Image (tube, rainbow, N blue to C red; front, side, top):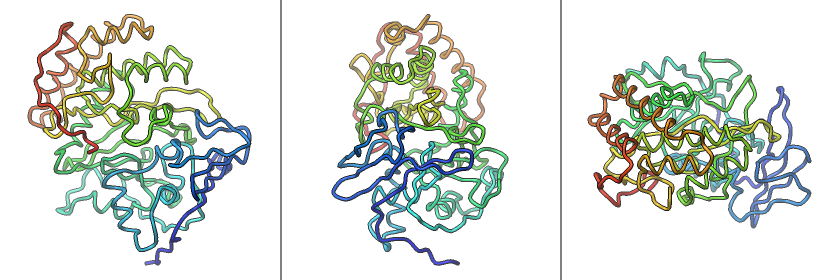
Length: 405
C-alpha cells in the first residue's frame, strides 16, 4: 500500500471549476492572520454574494461560500483524528481534501496527491448482508475523497475517481444513522418519497435491504456539467448555528431577490409547506439552496434534500427550525395561507390541500413507513394542522435538544 503523504498545513488554495473538461481558475484563497480570497479573473463570480472585484475579500472566519462545504460533527472529528499526525486539520485542509468532489461547481486545488479508491457499486450498497456494518468501511475508504457538509454521517461515492463509471446512476451520497436517531435512513427515505408524490421533484433515492444505508443521487450535475450551489445560510450571511436564526418569510424574500422569479418563490413556498406538513423541525437555512450555471445564469431553487419527520424522535423538540410569524410553533392552515398571500402566491389554500392530500395518500400506501413504529400516526398528526384554522394544544414534549447539538 502506498504511504500517504500530506503536508503539515495548507495556507493556499486555487479555487477553480471545470468547463468542457478544461480547468478554469477563478481565484486564490489564502489563510494567514485572516482568510483572503483574491479573484484572478473578472468575469465569473464564485458566489452570488461575492461579485468580481480587484481588491481581495477578507474574512476572519472562512468565507460563507467555502464554509458551506465543510463537514460538522462526527465526520469532522473522524477526519481530524485520522490525519492528526500530519498536522492541524483546519478549514483550509478540509477544502483541499474535498478537491473537486464537493457539492457545487467549485474545486479546490492545493496540489495534493491522493490515492485512488476502489469503487463500490450501488447494488453492493443496497444488498449488503455482511455482519460487519458497511458505513464504517465506506468511511474508511472514502474519507479522503468523500467529505461532505452537515452533521449526519455521510460519504460521497464519486464514480469517476479511476476514470470509469462503476454504477449506472449519478454520483451517490450514502448516509447512515446512529443510536440517537434509529432508522433515520428509513425516515428520510419516506419523507423524500412523499415529496416525490407531491411533485416536488427530489433526486432519486434508495434504501438498502438491511436499512443501514440511505442513498441519494447527486443533483448538482446536469449534462456532465456541475452547477453552482449556494445554501441560504451562505446567501444570507449566516455562520454555524446561525442557520436557525431567520424566518421563512425572510427565506422567501431572499428567493425573490436572487432569482427574480415568481415561479421560484412558489416552488420555495411549496417546499416550506411540505416541510411543515411532513413534520420536519430541522428545515433550516442550509437545507434550502439555489443552483445555477456558474456566471449567475439560470438561478433556480435546488431540489428538496435532507428532509425528515423529526417530531418522532424524543431528543428533538417539536418546534420548527425557523420562525414563521415570529413563532417556531408548527403553523396551522390559516398561518400557511397568510404566508402565501404575503408573498404573492395564487391560491395558497389549493397548494396546501394538494400537498396534504398527496402526503396522506403516500403514507397510506408506503410499506417502508411501517418499519418505524408510530411514524405514520406521527405524520398524520402533523397533517392535522393543515386541516385546521385554529390552534392545537401542545401534543409533544418541550425544550428538547436540536439534532445538531
